[in-house]
Image 1 (cartoon, helix red, strand yellow):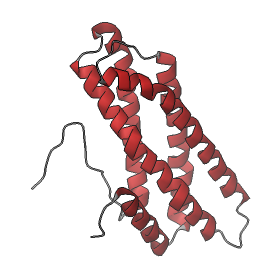
Image 2 (tube, helix red, strand yellow; image 1 turned 90 degrees about the horizontal axis):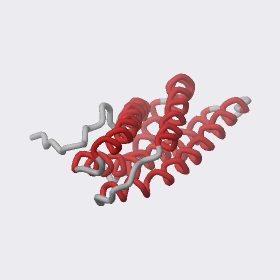
Image 3 (tube, one colour; image 1 turned 90 degrees about the vertical axis):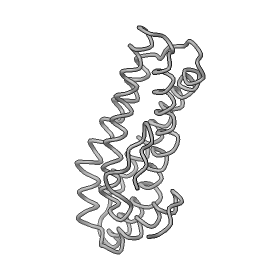
Image 4 (cartoon, one colour; image 1 turned 60 degrees about the vertical axis):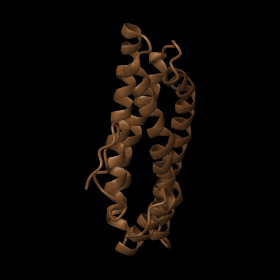
Length: 182
């Protein structure tokens, strides 16, 4: 039996395929950013109505949980596995990319904190608006970050990580989410 939860779509890939799950998460992040972009003109035209409150709640739920897990999946598990896979090799380029991606995560989290308070007010029904430039800053930063991960990080991980490495990353992802091993 499948349960349908409004505003939630199950992952296209699970923790048994961690790289595919990370990639699918990128698509959901882009969807949430698109929702934020649509919310700006919606608020101007309709104010804080039921649709705006629901959208704000969905975006907050996603970025407060799934996006945080996504960053942790990369920083706590994928990045160390990649560096370990390069043991004995010259991993300077890999370390530079990882440092850059971690810095992106901090900048994305700062952009999110700036928007979250307003979204919480919208979800509570307060008549506030979003600053289009703040929404664009988050969305554009995520677009660039996702592009780099899709074009560089994930293909590199697919080449360098063994099945055992990927299984360890998948286990850590399940533990982080409180999912029992199948």
